[in-house]
Image 1 (cartoon, rainbow, N blue to C red):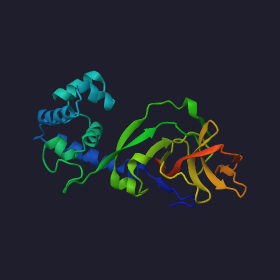
Image 2 (cartoon, helix red, strand yellow):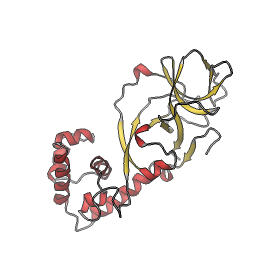
Image 3 (tube, rainbow, N blue to C red):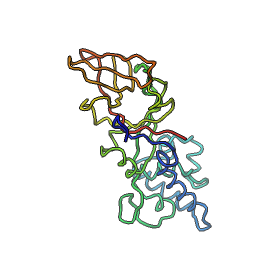
Image 4 (cartoon, helix red, strand yellow):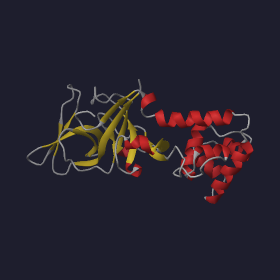
Length: 251
C-alpha cells in the first residue's frame, strides 16, 4: 500500500493476469487430454446459451468472436479458445472445469469450485495521466473475467463498481506510467483523505490526479511529475468519478 492509499502492483504474472492465467492453464490441460469431448462441450455451451435465448451469432457478438468462428465453436467443429472459455464460464455463472468436461460442480460458487470469476469492465484510454477530453471517449468497453478473490485484495466494493483504465501520459510519473493499468472504484467518491489518487472530471476533461482539499473549499489537482503544474478546481468545477485503488504494471 502506497502513501496515496492505492496498491501498487508490479509484475503482471503476480497481479492482473495471475488469476486468469491459472484458469487458462487449467483449461488447456483439460482440452489436451485424450478423453476431452469437444462435441459434448459444445452441447453444454449451446444449452446454456439457449437458456438465455442466445444463438451462435449473438453469443459470438457478446464474446467478440467473428460470425464464422462462432458458428464453428457452436457446432463443435472447433474448440473455444481458452480465454473465451473464461468469458463463457462467467457469462453463464458455471465452473470452467464443468464447462469443459462435465465433471465437478456446475456452478462457479458451488462447494468444491475453485473459481468465482466476475466480469470487470475495461475502458481503454478513458482517462489520461494528463487529461482526455470526455466527449471523445467513445470507445466500446470490453469486459474481462477476473477471480473475485483477486479483486478483494484491492477493495471490498462490489465488482460492478470497478473498472480498469490504461494510463496515457506522464504527468503522474513515477507513480503511474504510460500504459499502466489503474483499478478505479466508482463507489468511492467522497474526498475524505488528503492526497489520494482519484479519477475526476474537471470541466470537460477526465484525468487521474492526487486531490487535496483546501480550506476555502477549492481542490488542488496535483501531479506526481514535478514538471507539471497543479490545477485548482473551484465552484463545482470538479466531480469525482472514483478512487484509484490499484496500479498494475507489466515488468
